[in-house]
Image (cartoon, rainbow, N blue to C red; front, side, top):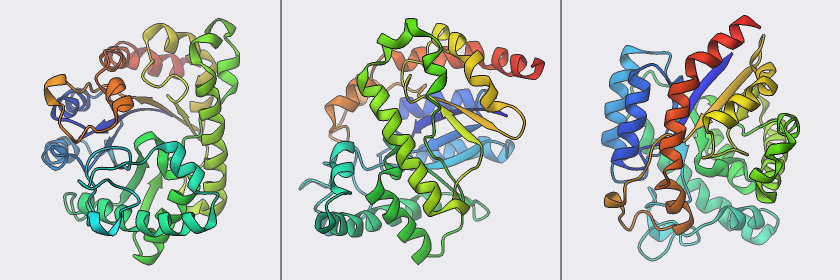
Length: 300
């Protein structure tokens, strides 16, 4: 099975509008929703109108600790936010904290509070029949200290969770085209490897909450899912979507406009990516290749 998924719905009004249009036109099987931004809840209400008409559209909570304002009481999570309540974390910092027992315990406790707040903020906007599905901005939920805090919340609050996305992106397909090696960069290779290791740890710790035979594609080529690259790599990825396996193509097809920038967007590195024309390019790729990819898989 092949799934087409869009991350970062709710990041801005324009991002939500672009993803909403793709979902309405049937290009998406799933959407991940950021809940801690100014326009998140109104955007989610709009998305639910599509969900009510198309129950196959899977909506996930996109836990976010990288930017925006916290959902918990800022005074209770000073390790996670600045004096204004905006997140002041990085992926590298959370990963490093995971290996220092004293710090890890403190961060784990504060992460529990924020995770719980984001989950309930999200669930309050969803229909009563909805069963929680979870992933995260920058895949931070599989970082050991964050994963443990998430498991604490799900267990202590007896929250039913249908699905937790693990960023298990196969490496082998990328080795098939040497001409693309230099376009990934060393950081992408390292990121892929670390996320796979973290995902393996997570799957061993809580096998009931994670999908089996699930592969994600869109990490090494994140925000660079152009038509040529996806077309070239798909023959090597398609086996992960056959039989009882699921291949999820991950896109970021919503672009933040410069006119939308407020103090919420307090991570310059992220903002550079989120305002990039590459996001519009990913949207065009999704539209161009959606039907071609599905039909090619059916023929094999």
